[in-house]
Image (cartoon, rainbow, N blue to C red; front, side, top):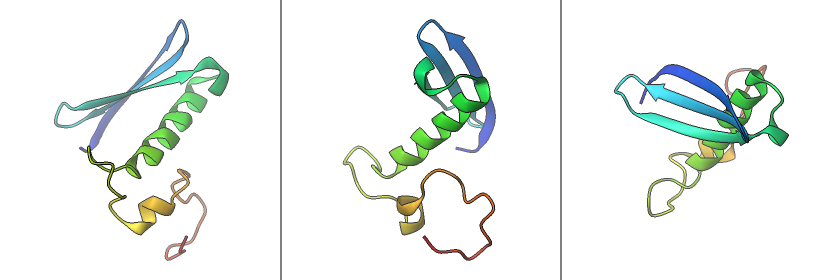
Length: 86
C-alpha cells in the first residue's frame, strides 16, 4: 500500500486517523485525547502505533519483515545520517 491520503477527525473520545492507500485500502487508528492534544500529535502517535504493529507481522504473529523495522522506534530516523545502524 502506498500512502495516498491521511484523514483526521476529532471524535467524542479522541482522534481517528485514517491512512488511505492508492489501491483503496485504509487503516484507522484511534488515539485517545490523553495521548494527543492536537492533530499533529495524533498523527505522530498513529505513526508510532503503525510502526509498533509491524513487529507482529501477519496473522501468525510472525517477526518483522527485516531487522531495521524491528529495531525502529517510530521516529523514521529524523536527523540521522544514512547508514546509521540501530
